[in-house]
Amino acid sequence: MHNVFWKLGLIATLAGCASSQPASTTILGPVSGQAAQASAQPASPASAPMLAPATQTPSVRTETAPVAPVTAAAVMPTPAPASTSAIPAASTAHAANTSSSVAFATRHAYYAPARFDDLPGWNADDLSGSWDAFKRSCSVLGSRTGWSDPCAASRSVNANDAAAMRRFFETYFNAYQIRNTDKSDDGTMTGYYEPLLNGSRQYGGAFLYPVYGTPDDILYLDARRLPDSARASTSAARIEGRAVIPVTDATPGNTKGIYALDLRDSVPDIRDKKIRLRLDHERIVPYYTRAEIERGALKAPILAYVDDPVMLYSMQVQGAGKVRMGDGTVRRFAYAEQNGRPFLPPVARAGGSGKRITVRGVDVEIEVEDESSTGGTGNASSQTSGDAVGGVPLSRTQDDDEPVSPLLRGFTLAAATPQSGGSVTPAGRPAGGANIAASTSAAKTGNVDAGTAGTTANSTPGKRVFAISDPSYVFFRLIPDSPNGPVGALGVPLSAGRSVAVDPRTTPLGAPVFVSTRDDPQAPGAIDRLMMAQDSGGAIQGAVRADYFYGFGQSAQAQASRTKERMRMWVLLPKGLPIPARDATLKTRGGGAPAPSADCVVSDPQLCVDDTP
Image (cartoon, rainbow, N blue to C red):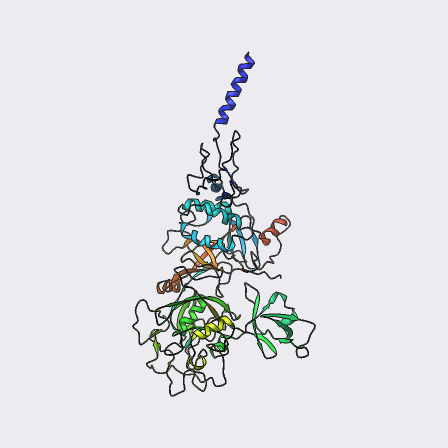
């Protein structure tokens, strides 16, 4: 009898211990066909282990009940099995203070694992400001390896709950501090914006400067397939469509369709590893420089004419812009292509006589070049009725809404009417005064004879303003106008204050990045926030490098021109994302880290092509 009472007491004690467990637990993983897309993956090894229920309780798998959004209440275990959450608070609190990854390096950057709590201001940033930008990244990356799980899980996150969004990133991403190859963490943040220019559909008056579409004669050579010998001397190649194919078993001039390939000082694009070329009689050579283009050596559709060559140069450097036409309509332009030349802006010199402007953190100085009919240079001519002062034609009143070049205030642009020294004939003047309607049609059909730029036997250089020392040149495409930001390199609209341009070799396009310009988030002027890497640019190169997108218009222009800050930078990479450089480090752990060889931290055929074909 004594034994019976002892056993009953033991059973009662065990039952009391079991009752301390919740009646149900937070369920990880898919719960139903529709909910599976919105549910999270199992917690990472760094997360706290889930406690199993004391008894077998059925999972919530109702087909009709909607998936509850992730909120602070939803993530806490409760006795009622009425709701589930993909992101348990205990797991993310642990994940925010640990890092299960390892350091690794590419040829251009070093990546140090970091805790989310080490990111200055991480817990204070209102992540709702970056949520729309993140969802736009997912619209491009959601079907790619490593991104499908976090992008699917994001659909169940309450966009009004900053704490839930913070737990989401801590659950699905690893944080890495991006450092320079010498492991220093200091970098530069600059700013850019979407400018507004005055424009016309027709050449004439103050509107002398063409906005070019992609030339129809530009060719592409995959530099990864180039024999080593082709760099040192002229080699041979054939043309297939727009692709240049190097050949080693033929000699230029002896075989039909085989051309001499002269690469000279050309450089491949850092994203697609392609060299931009053109056919010059029997030779394939690098595409035209800015100086050649602005003097008329180009055959391309003309999308608009603008009145301010310096703002046009700024639009090329920004990579996007709007042009307000004479009838009040707005034409919006996005980056389409580049001439393949390196970005080498005319950097301002101490004591220089040119006009200055800060563009994407670069202090640019642009000299005025006055080309007479004989090709000589001199000072700008006296103002005429067709001149534009400060980027605004004299026939209009300058007000706060006018696109005004800060570089050109009080500065006379090229006259649009004939002068004693000769008529004005800029490179983009169409034959017979054709307007851009013909050019737009030509761009669609590939026939660019009318309304396009191109040299003719009777072309006479006129008075123009050049940013001539920068060899790079950007071509545009027309896109619909909308309240959204311009389209960036990722292919999605940019979000003012939450999108940044980066070097895609060191920061994958689409990835969340956290930037910090001050250790103290409360310090005046501090920018400590989560943003999305959604753009790139020729001026944005380097490991710890970001270009902050301020938005559209003059206010954004003013802020961007003042921005040049020291910063530190972190990238958030999905836990399931394959990273060859990191995986190689894991394989050789204890045997010495391998020498960095990867060009892109994440290789992608559209966003960053690695060196190996």
